[in-house]
Length: 260
Image (tube, rainbow, N blue to C red):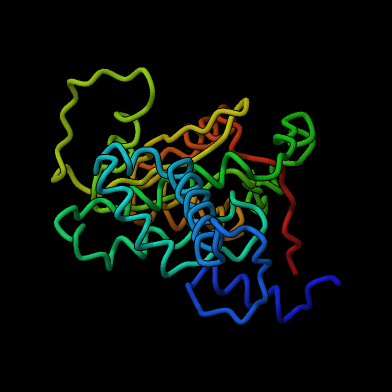
């Protein structure tokens, strides 16, 4: 007879939370009691989630070392059961978790590195999209430029930190030399995460360029966003910033805002 919904729920809670289960488990294996069988499932469950976190946060693991990372993931898994059938969805709350994880409190930059790594992880698995069609854009009249609304590729995001998280991330990528030096007091970092040719990249932006991109992401039209940034940062170069986004494949289309 197929297991009932209550039976399956009970089994899941026994595996995930260690709850007592009233399930009748076949006892035909005298040397393999039910408690041992459940522990095998628990270990497999935790192991799969640990591997998912290790895949999403390789820089965090390098920064803290494998023993500490295992301790971190064990605590995370205990408080954050998987809620998706897709393991690539697991680990979203790691940055907030690290912020409250007392053993990591002296690593003040670690939570922001985790936020950047999750953005990279999501960028890799994000939907694809066509780039901005420059030929189509050229058909607009100059009078329409101010009302232009640029669309950002779904793999792109902007991450802000008080610490040099882009430099930390880049220094821990495969093939990078070991003799790097990072000044944690070097000031705020504005990191653009993007995916190009199936490779995730992290690029550090100036404060002005980051402020402009943030306005663009929020749906503000080109004229309004440029004016707002130029008021705060008179040296902002709109033409260069726009050319850089086009070259990196950050822009994925456009629309023109209708004016009254």
